[in-house]
Image 1 (tube, helix red, strand yellow):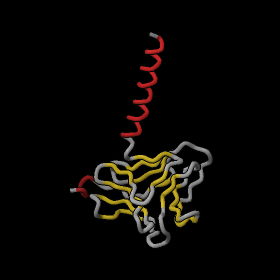
Image 2: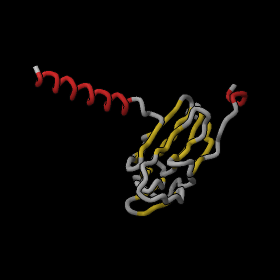
Image 3: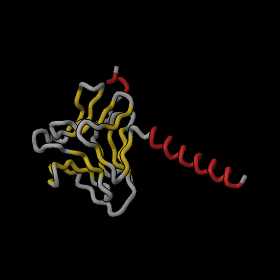
Length: 138
């Protein structure tokens, strides 16, 4: 009986972990990255690492609100959210863009917010400054 309870407890904890990861579609945690074509999104806002090496925030998948300006500056690029809370675009081992944040060994998160702003939190450390008013969305 005790073994069955241990198995059930373990499965419950595992399912909570998996469920929490499944709903974190709008967030990156420090140490995670976006490979080419990967994105995080919230509602109409998509933050995507494009194949041309440009990291872009779109509204409705068509209108760019912000971009790293790194298109054509590398191949097989990826956006890496480093453990020091710095967001970088890298091509191979070369950094082609950086949010220029260094917060030490913090646990940070990058969130695509429902207002169209992409923010790095530990404290608000960096943002795309693209907050959209509700009227503008109509």
